[in-house]
Length: 165
View 1 (tube, helix red, strand yellow):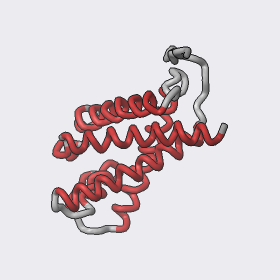
View 2 (cartoon, helix red, strand yellow; view 1 turned 30 degrees about the vertical axis):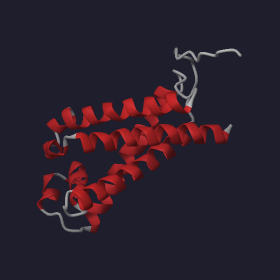
View 3 (cartoon, rainbow, N blue to C red; view 1 turned 120 degrees about the vertical axis):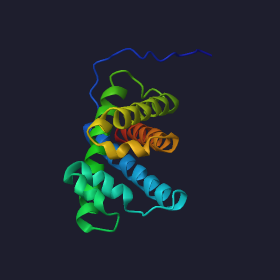
């Protein structure tokens, strides 16, 4: 029996950008549902709190004045969340593919988890300088949600990339 070690050195390979975008979109949907469930069931808050926080990135802090349902706020939040998810899916694929982190499901999940932690740190300790209202979301549950986002995006990319071959 031979033992094959997959080398994770840089290799000139291009990601499948469509698969990456779909993976980021789907992972964004998973994260959105997790956020909704967490805020509603665990925190006992309005299900629209996260929508207002995310929409405030685009609409400004006035969107934070209420936590009631608003079609405009929810629409802007969905668009913002999905654009960010797609963008992050593209970045993740640009990391996975040239370094051959897609050599196994375990490696791709680990890469996605690390990516999720990095997104969490960037968002909640870097971007919070510009969007201060996100500071209150710092914590293990938010980080776990981002780890799940990264793992879902990476696993979906891995699976969809195999299907397309």
